[in-house]
Image (cartoon, rainbow, N blue to C red; front, top):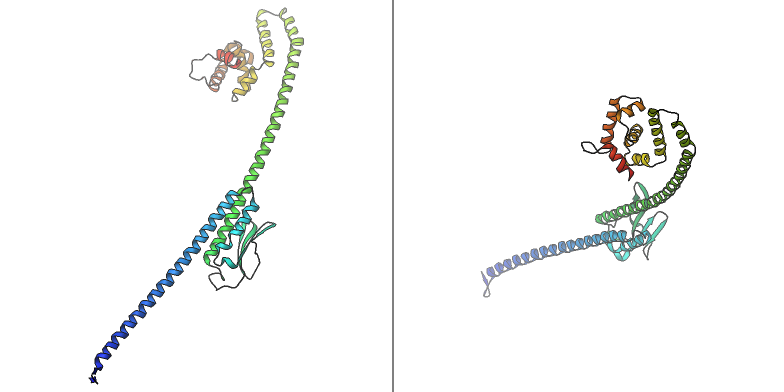
Length: 317
C-alpha cells in the first residue's frame, strides 16, 4: 500500500526496527547502570574494609609502642576511631578505662551509639564508645554496619588483652625486684651466720686444745698400746670437728647419710673395715655394703680409684 508515493508498509517495518533497537539500548543502559552501581558498592565496601584494617593495625602499633604509657595509647586509639567509621565527619569517640576517660576533641554523646565492653581477665574495666552526632540511614545495627560492630569488638578485646599483659608484666617485675631484695638479705644473713660459725669454730678449737687434748695426753701414759689406738682415733675425730672435711663432704655429696659420712671419716684416717665394724658395733659385711654405697654416691663405682686416697686428696681441696 502506498500513500502519495510513500510505502506505508515499509515505514511500519522501519518503525518496528527502531523500536526494537531502542528497547535494546534501554536494556544495555539498565545493565550498565546496574554494573556501575554494584561496582560503586564494592569499591565503597573495600574502602571501608581498608579503613578497618588500618584501624586495627594502628591500635596494635599504639599498644605495642606505649606499654609504659597507657594513657598515651588510649588517647591515640580514641583519636584513631572516627576516621575508621562510615561517616567520620560526624563521628565522635570515647574510651573509658577504670576511672579515666579519653575523648576525641569534638566529643559529644547522642542517641546513635555503638559500644563494646573492655575486660581484663573476666573483670569489666571499661568500654569503647562511638557516636554519630546526626541521624543517618538505617543499616545493620541502627546506622552502623555489621563490620563496624566486629571492629569495635576487636578493638575492645585487644585493649583488654594488652592491659592484662602489661599488668602481668609489671607484677612480675615487682616480684622479681622483691626476690632480688630477698636474695640480698639472705646473702647478708648467710654471711653473718658464716662469721658466727667461724667464731664458734675458733672457740671450740680453743676449748679442745686447752681442755680435752691435755686430758687425752694424760690418759696415754696409763693405757695399753691397743687402747692408745682408740685414743688416737678420738683425737682425730676431735680434730675433724674443727676441720672442714665433714662439711665439705656433706656439701659436695648431699646423698651421703650421716653414718656414711662418719665411715668416710674413719676410712680417710686409715681404719680397716674390721676396725670400723668393731667401733660401730656392726658386722664386717655391713661396712662392706656401706663402702659400696659410698663409692656409688661419690661417682667411683666401676673405677679403679682408691677410696682412702680419694678422700684424703680430693676432699682436702
